Image (tube, rainbow, N blue to C red; front, side, top):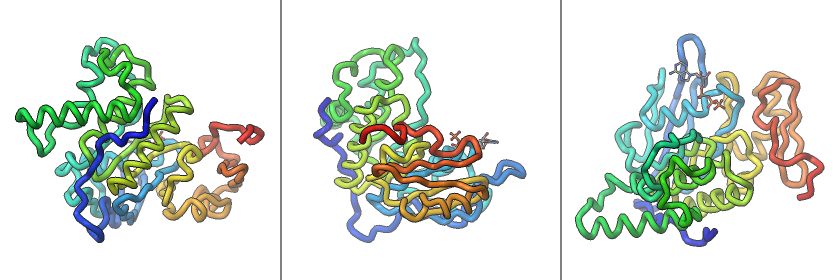
Length: 287
Ligand SMILES: Nc1ncnc2c1ncn2[C@@H]1O[C@H](COP(=O)(O)OP(=O)(O)OP(=O)(O)O)[C@@H](O)[C@H]1O
């Protein structure tokens, strides 16, 4: 797999000090009486990598849905890529939670990736079509998908489909990347490769990344800040501040131990469904 080339990602950067790419202020989301999160203030700067953690049902995907304009806040405000959610989607790359595509889907992988480019400002004149083809090819190469890019996507494995989704999200040179558990169903080599691609993209093109995950360890070195959601409450801060026994005990309101072993974080608690209860590596694994 060749992951050394960036997926032709050169987001339009309006210069230093252009302000947060994602801005939530006093944001509250409730379904009926159930409050997922309340009073959330979060600014994500260009190039910043924010991991969104929390147990099942804590509202991680709902946060991405708010930013995509698919779900209205109950109160507070949200802005993304300089616009209200739902109106600036061309500047947003989105990697949805893995869902197997219909096996009968005849669309080729290359065309799936191309959908991520369409609506782009270059339009579809002769030059535009050439640029589109080139950018799609670069994105496919960046995720190591050349070997299967011309096959119907419905026949590909879950991991192959997922790599094409990553390429689709990056091909339009987004300003912000919203990722919903993008490493799920990828083997370890491709987890590393996709993480590195996202990391390189955000550094080179100053793309802000919001990365929903149940497992922080594969991305721990990349994370600038963690947003940890639990039962309507949240904490935001660098991993060293949030991923501590004290902070998570306060957040879960039940005793939690955060153990660091060989550079990895393991969260241990009596309550089932904790964020890190299924680490990729056991504590006695070799590093
Ligand atoms: N439109 C809706 N109406 C009512 N409840 C909803 C709606 N959308 C989501 N929910 C509920 O809100 C809760 C949060 O869902 P969400 O998918 O955001 O959680 P999550 O943190 O991403 O969970 P997981 O880790 O399981 O993916 C869930 O209990 C879900 O059933």
